[in-house]
Figure (cartoon, rainbow, N blue to C red):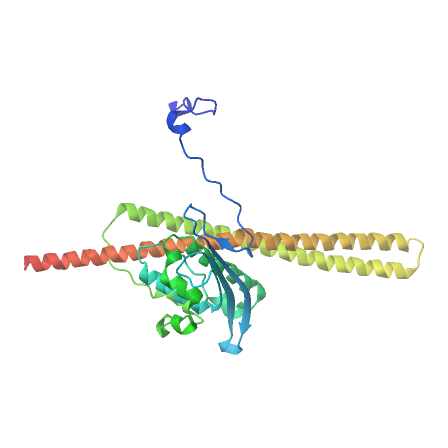
Length: 329
C-alpha cells in the first residue's frame, strides 16, 4: 500500500499556524430563479450593478418580425446618468454590444451570446418556450458582463443601456441572417501556429469538456421530453378514466356509484401525476438544461479565446520570419 494513505488527514490533527490564518472559503449562494435580477458580486468596492432582461414582445410580421426585450440596469456607477435605466433592446443590439466588447477588449474573456440562428430558431423563434429560454440566456450574458470588474465599467455597456438605436447600428456584414449561425464556423480562418504543448493540452481539454457537456445535454434533453410525453399520456388516460366513470354513473346500477367513484379517483390521480411530470420537466429544463447551455457557451468562449491567441501567435511568428529574411538579405 502506498505511503500516501499513512498521512491522510482525519480532521482531528492540530491546525498549523498557516492553516489557522487561512481565509475562510467563500460561501456560494444557490442559483437565483430565472426571473430574478442578477447582481455584481460584492467584493468590498461598494459597486452595485443589477441587470434584468424581461417582457419579451413580438413586433412586426413575416420576415420583418422580431422580439424585443425590456432591459433594466440599476447601478451606482457615476458614469451613468441615472441610477436606474430601462430600455427596449433587440437581439441585434446584444450583437452590437458583443462586437464592441470583443474589438475593444481583445485580451479579456468575453461571454458568448446565445446563437440566434440555426435550424430550430428558424421554425420556432417566436414560440413561448424558445423566447423564454432566449430571455434567460441574454440575462445571464449581461450578468457575466456586469460581474466583470473592467467590462462592467466599459463605454459599450453604458451605450447599450443608455444609448439610442442610431448609436448601436451594426454594419451589414455583421448582421445576423437566418442561417448565419450555421455558416459562421465554416468561415473562421486560422493561421499556422508554432507547436505549443501547454496550449495544445489546454485546447484538447476544452474540446473534451465540450464533448462531455454535449453528451449530458443530449441526455437531459431526451429525459425532459420523455417526462413531458409521459405527462401528456397520463393526462389523456385521466380524461378517459373520468369519462368512463361518468358513463358508469349514468348506468344506474347498484354498483355503478362505487365503480364511477373508483374511475374518477383514478383519473384524478393520473391528472395529478401528469401535472407533477410536467412541472418536473420544466424544473429540469430551467435548473439543469439551461445551466448546461450556459456551460457550453463558456466552453465556446474559451475556444474562441484560444483561437484568437493562436492567430496572434501565428501572426507574430510570421512577422519574425519576415524580419529574419530581411536581416539575412
